[in-house]
Amino acid sequence: MDLAGVLMVCAERGPFDRVVVAEQTRVVVDALGRLPRRERALLLLREQHRLPLAEIGRVLDLPVGTVKTALHRARLSLAEALPATEDRPAARPGRSKEILA
Image 1: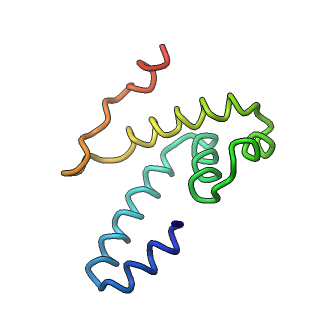
Image 2: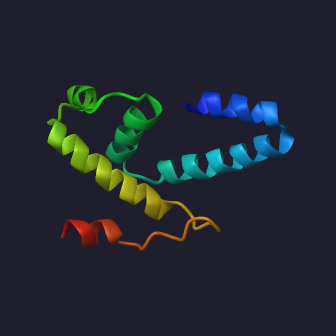
Image 3: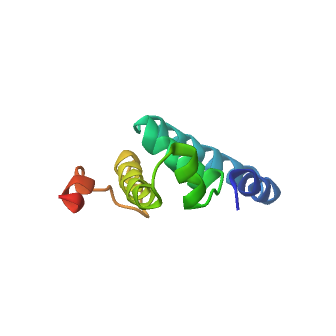
């Protein structure tokens, strides 16, 4: 389900859900804004626009293997950029560098 679908479902549930989704959306958009441009583009093409890996590779002129690796790193960076919540502890800073070393 895309963001518009989530917002429609929450709109049907009530004002509290709309506030929660709006806050969660703000937090994710803020975290995405702190990512490097390439990581942000990769995540948006894959998660928001639902493009297949091969299509992302064509758009960004990258081999599919590079797209997979870059998406993995972008997800790690996003996890580091997001604040901790009750449900999700903070990502360890530099974790992406640890994994890739």
